[in-house]
Length: 312
Image 1 (cartoon, one colour):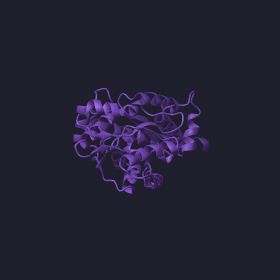
Image 2: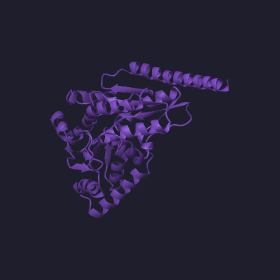
Image 3: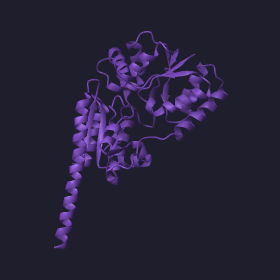
Image 4: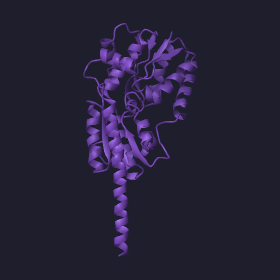
């Protein structure tokens, strides 16, 4: 059997884990191409209208794969941390696909809890056994897959730029360059480096959310808030750019509590959907970078004025 891997949603975070697992078992697989206009059009035409952009894009990747493979790995991810959950659409993604796309091959439907080793192994075991692999080889492939994820370089932390901003948002918005219109490359060209939440220690993120009235039960919200506040307090960034999918309920809340904490610190929300125009995005990015430069110049002037006043 030929296995299909859609290059959308949590593939951007765990894709290397699944690929390594399949390779270690000697299973043949195909990955859908990077998101492009064709993939997006397929998703828009097959997915329900009120879904967010990442879910539509995922539909597009599955639609591209459906006639090219015998099984598509579509993880029904429920949670990645104890007492936390992720977007509800992940729980129902299988039903959305089945009711939106015709002619689908077999999909993986087993729920995936990533809280414990046993939960994760159970999911990988179900895939391996469905391919006719024995338990010993599945266990060996699982260990290799976990090791590959542990060893891979995660996130961005640019150096050598005059300014640096925190790039915050769900991983599939941060790392899918088509959806975010090559935001990191655009910022780099304007002399601005980026850093992402993966470069913030998990214990620090956990510490920052304890100051909230109620602990977030959405993993994405916790990571976005904790990383933003940690980087802001460390003074290692000049601003924050939050990439948000239009109509994302989780983002609508976490954005406001971040803004409430950081006050007048430079903060830009970049809303994206299938109608977002690149020219408008470019204008906003350029204006934000200009603001960072002007703010820095004003702070230098105030600093100089303070020195002169002190000497008098």
